[in-house]
Length: 342
Image 1 (cartoon, helix red, strand yellow):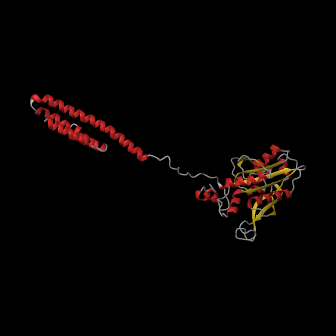
Image 2 (image 1 turned 90 degrees about the horizontal axis):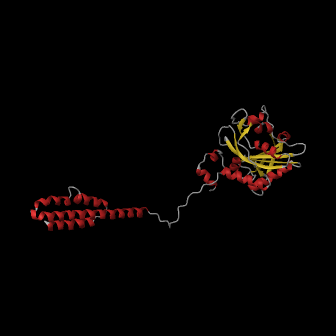
Image 3 (image 1 turned 45 degrees about the horizontal axis):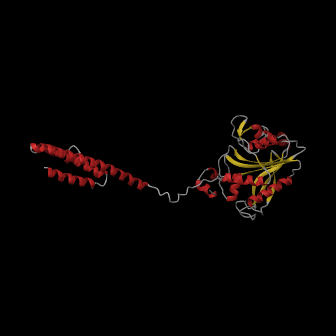
């Protein structure tokens, strides 16, 4: 019996050393070391040997069982380490490889255009000035020569919070703040910002849009200064050979008031569908600051005069890039926005 026991031990130990993974090791345990396993069954053979041999045989069975259990635990620890090492190797990242490039965000086309337009005027000496989006009625309308019963208010459908508080409909409301801060000193500012109007959203109109407005006040300001500033702006934005055309118009806060056109950027003045075959595209509104507005701002219209102008940024984007729907600009479609650079 001892010889058979030694043969079993040798065979079992070889099988244990040949286990390749934890699953094989679990199968070995169930076959040999579990309560119904082969190693345990050897204990049942103790009673079958002669009495004088039982003590030595029982000790041998216990030693075989103990050694197999110890060898099993050692093998289990080794296979666990091997399994961990294989998992780490499979999931390892080669840190020497170049990193994957990440897409970098970019500025919105309106932001780019506002910065470009403001930059042109700043290079001409206009100081940037910002004002609040939520305004008082008097700053947005009354101090700009539009009293409560003025028909020009009907041209701007307004978002009101209350009878006296509203979302600004134009950046012109910032002119009052600037004039009252700097009067009676000469003033040269550019006012960029977002404006709001309660309008139907169509290919040509939105409930929000960006404006850049300019204001110049001084003792010797003339209409020719306005034309010179706007001609320089047009050539900075649309090319050194660009021309402008000034047409009479009406705005309640300027007198006289004008509309300023540029030569069509698509047909160079020859006439096309975009410019309706006139050769000109409307760019902005402008004029001499109305004496009443100067007075509301703290200036004496007998001593100083001013010029003011304002243009819609989204309209400028449409003109420059041949876009026929303003809604693209505010829909946040990345396919559209990425065309303006990253």
